[in-house]
Image (cartoon, rainbow, N blue to C red; front, side, top):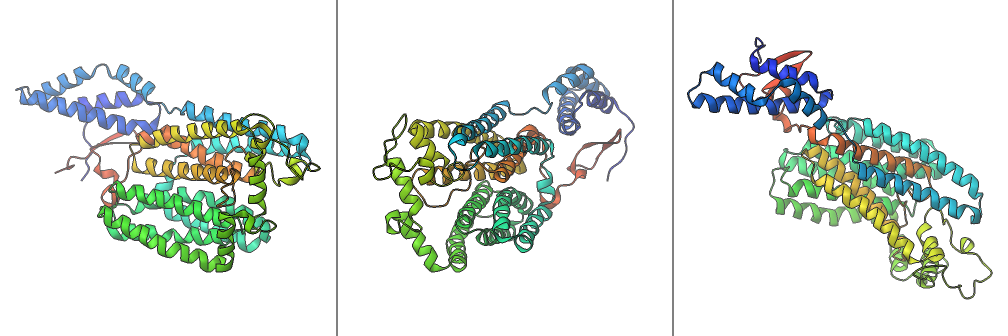
Length: 467
């Protein structure tokens, strides 16, 4: 039961402090912390023999002037971006534009026009990132069903009502949002025991199936990326004990069922013959040098002639062809291979270093998140970003297990750029406000569980808390 108390010295003090804190999202958790501190001090003074009124006065006096305290808290709890991560994002984006300028004059298509398009996409991506940065990321935890199945509906509609090639490209890029949506679903199902855990495992098959329906070549890439990202999220939730299940048993169930179900789904949809040929080509591109193994064979030839610094050695037997004629899609899928051959392995080392710095910084901030939702959402975004980088670098280094999707913020392509910048904006939003997010503790957590609440200028005290 909640009752409206007459203003007391403590509530008046808290109200004065609240008026100094301009960021409304910070008000409630900060005031709850101050209230708890004052109550603890008050109880300590009462145990020393002071009256309740005297103890309250002493406790408030120890806190200091409410205006000064409020101003200090206002400065301490203003939303601030993580500047190192933001600077690295800008650096990677500018690096991508610089590389497109470098490739443009030699590209067999209109390089100048392609750069102009990429520049426009970069501007749009910046606006999308800012919008995502300002969004309250907690909507992912409050409406996970709507977001998850709304995304499914958009992708299915894309498959049904647009041209096959275009719909596949759109859907492939939109599927990058699924790990983040899945993080909200896991957050909602935590504290539901084995039922919630199993449901989180089963629902992975929905985006996995949608990925397989996409453009052949990229569909297995997205299939791997989505399943791996979702498994990372679910594994983290299990190991942290958020499902209240036996951890080893849950992990055994998860990975056993994954090994049985997901490969079966993939083989049934893709066809055993196609998968077998792909495996042969991955292990030895020369198995089919003019078919599935063509790209792998070309990449190996370029890399074997690359130097540590500087232009690679001439390719014997192909002197009459330029690099751009032999290597397709140098500004999109095989950008790194081209850069390695043109400028040396030092380029790959530099790009790996800046991308690694971004990922490591993001992981450090992710680990520091106090809220479950902030941790899961940031882990989902980082996992997707890191897997894109790993797959792309592996393919361009001759390990052609999967077709490259994109090198985030660097390779050419507007849709992938906008989506990755949107996710980075959401990641920065988590790091901006995540420390002040209060997790809903399952079904038992409601606003009434707080001792003190502020509602339209009124202070509401819950006297039956913890009774």
